Length: 602
Image (cartoon, rainbow, N blue to C red):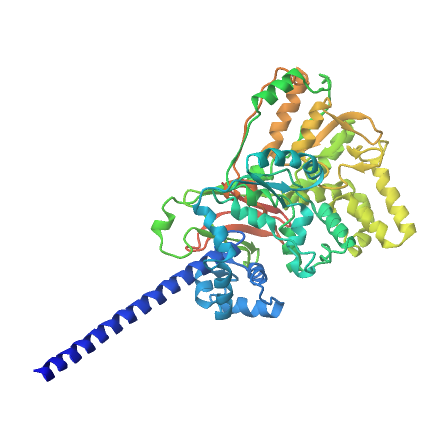
């Protein structure tokens, strides 16, 4: 009996051991599965963080920035090898599945270490699920707002500190953003954090409380000036004009309206506070009187502009349900030449159900003819010629339109000195100032004097074939065509309306002006206002109302999303938007040579 009982105990013990082993194995498997899920979640979050343009795929530049962020060597050979290893379908981008399935083990560990629970990023991530912290972010920007910060910020802090609220300063100035994009060119004491990217992440959370001051939307000349100043002060950032394509991509991230699309996660609602409006009525600013005989007027194209060529396409609301294709709701933008060959301009743009996408073009030949016509008409009418664009916000299309105006106005000089223009790479999109800068640097004093005299002749209000140009600074001879960012339409037109519809001429006097606004998308509004003032006189600030401005800018809508979808056609052909899953052409435009094409979403 004892032996039988002992045998039963042994058997029972073995069974228990087996059961314990099975439970232990199951627990181990469960632990491993949980760890694997956690790792995939961490890798997916890292992917989203590095997907700067929210396209759903990483390009080579984003892979390089990811390696830089992870403190992994990122020389060109390593980046190329890694990119090829990840891009299994050879479409020029790395999708999430490719990232999850093929990321090398060492890199996976680096990502897990940086993003894992307990890391600094994990602590930062947690604010999404907690009550917003009592903290205000005040942005350090450029020029006048930057100067105002030194007097206003101490006052703000004096109030917030008494309430136990911290007010921290974040540098999103142009210089700060340039430095943040080139850490590999700086020593450890010069490197700065990418505050704009951090604020972009913060603005997606309930904890966001940001005082965002106006910041510069840098044109190319302004960026070049900033880079030159940084280099002069010992920061070894690469020169803009002589940089490689990869460096140009980095600089593109700070050109134009680079800040607002990142921080503005909602649509803006701008209304004048009642107290401010009442003060303006009680203390009206001066307004110049308008004459019914004023010759000032707005000139715009009558066709072949963005307004006249716009096409729209509505993404089906059931796009995700009606297709199981991984690229459902994703489009590409491509150029098709006359011989049928295709070039991808933008490989992937994910769209939302019900979203509206637009495509339009500006015909360059028609634009140049329009400029010639209006230059001659300004001369005949005896008024100033003034071009009004927004080359800062519309950083791709408007500098090109500006450059064509410079070339047409000074066409005799550009034609006569075509060899100099080509040899010294005079860039009309940067304005007449670039011509002067290249003359200054050419080293040929005689040629410099000759061409400078010819340019100056065009500015004189005499019996020359050109009309006088409106001036930015009459005393220094700076015209409206010197620098594209000097005349920004939403500031320049209101200023002209306050000055009786006049602008300053080369003689230092106010004169009636032809306001040249090529595209009808917004030219007709200004045209109506000018005509109203000629008929009814100047506006009266003490009695006039106010306009509420609701800006549709969330998720890079409209012009905020147009920057990386605007192209200069390389040859005659067509540019079209194609659904990646079906190959269907959603919309497209035919282009003559070097037409400008712009796409937006809303």
